[in-house]
Image 1 (spheres, rainbow, N blue to C red):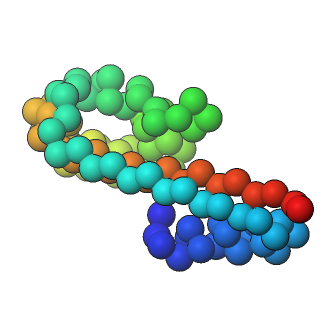
Image 2: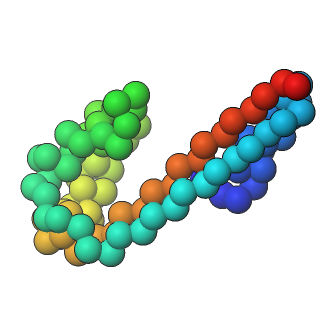
Length: 96
């Protein structure tokens, strides 16, 4: 999410009629992650409301694109040398 996206969240809340809006942002970067098998990685989901990566790839890419994408990631995932980045925004709003 870009910084402007966070501003959009606040703007949407204001436009919905909330005069009191608070946005808290938590960002984490992990350089050393645990090695994971390719199969497990494709079954993982960062949120119970979103599909696992493998399912998302099946929905959006053709088989050749999936192969190219997963083969590019495979060495990092299986060696644990990749990088994990997460950003979570908590928005609260109240009407006075």
